[in-house]
Length: 379
Image (cartoon, rainbow, N blue to C red; front, side, top):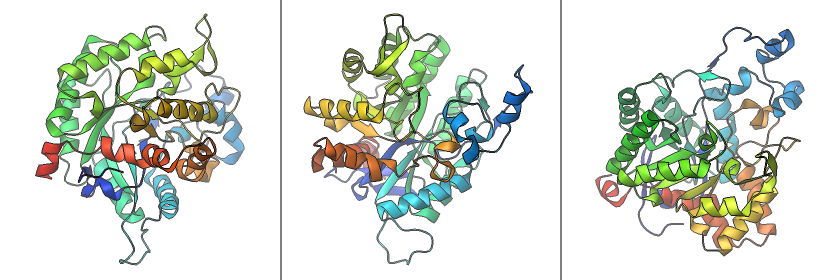
């Protein structure tokens, strides 16, 4: 854990990062309903499944990528149930706990989601910050709100930057990190990233990039797109130690010469990502594996141990990356408690010592997402 007085700007106000012993570094807790226009030319059975409520009976089809409106919608009640369970794992206070109970020791970085493939997500509600604040107070889990300004092709740069500014200053539940933001594939997106990065540098918050978006419009040349994005951030005056690349698993997955995915992690691709000098977030952990799984949790554990041995332990972050309802505990998934309850012990079986486990499960995130020194002084 950090030894200084690093401060987080949480939805409930400033908090010492040293109070946090476990951190999920990139989660989506609340997702607005998606819009599904008609049947989109689908078979009637597919259209009907798309509108069914998520249930255990539908779990297999959902795990295999079946498109479902309810699955892509996370309500505050879902987040409350998941965070309450997580608070008990972390030893944090819950709503019914006595006032004298110790302060919560765990935190979740709650990032606003980008539009999912095949869906359009409605902009976050105006009271998004207030919703997260209530969730934090009721469950005892510290929440750090991320904001991406609702960036989309039909949203102007000025509007998106304005929304980010408003979220950072939202008195009902201020944001404390900017992201997740897409890797630019157009000149307009590059301008937006530069302005967002400049805002991050000015306000002392960190910035999260969605690494998966580097694979669009084509999987080829993703590393050049990522390097270009980081050059933009450099010019904006934000240090790479303040940047997190999430969703990196898709970037480091093995590929055949034809470009098709293989199985496992490509060491050369992993080396290219590591050389970028940013924090790296493995944020898809705990998903139930199936025949579409390319990189397993085991592969990532091997990579973490190798990266730590090469001196990169202070840049590694872990999270579950729950963006669909069927990944929640109540709907058949492993839920937010997976990192603490299952994955950390698994890393221990590989020989991860207490220092490494503390770093990857909380210490690194507590430091990386803290305000810069100037902003700490003001806080």
